[in-house]
Length: 138
Image (cartoon, rainbow, N blue to C red; front, side, top):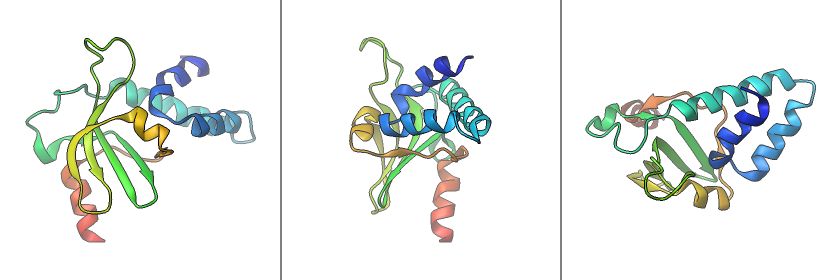
C-alpha cells in the first residue's frame, strides 16, 4: 500500500493537524520510522472489529485505539460498520474516561477529532480488563 493510500485509511481516525505533522515527519531524517508507524496504524484500523463484533466479550474486548487530550481518554474497541449511513466513519464503540472512571458507549470519532484529541501512535492493543488493571496499579 502506498503512503497516500495508507493516509487515506487513517484520515477518518486522525486529526488534520496530527496527520499534517506525520506527513512532515515522513519527509525528515526519521522518515522511514514514521512511514512504518503510519503503515502499522493503517493495518490496525483496517483489521479492527466493527460494531457488535466484540459483543458479549465484556472485559475481554480488545481496545484497538486510544485517543487523549488533557486528563481525558477514549479507548476504542470497535469501529462503525458504515451500514445505512453511507461511506465513512460515523461513530465507534468504546470506553470514554473523562477522569471519573469511564463509561462504555458510542463515541463519535469525528467529534473527538474536532475537539483536538490526539491518536496515541504508540498504543498497543490490550483488553478492557488489562486497562482496568493498569489503572488499579497506578
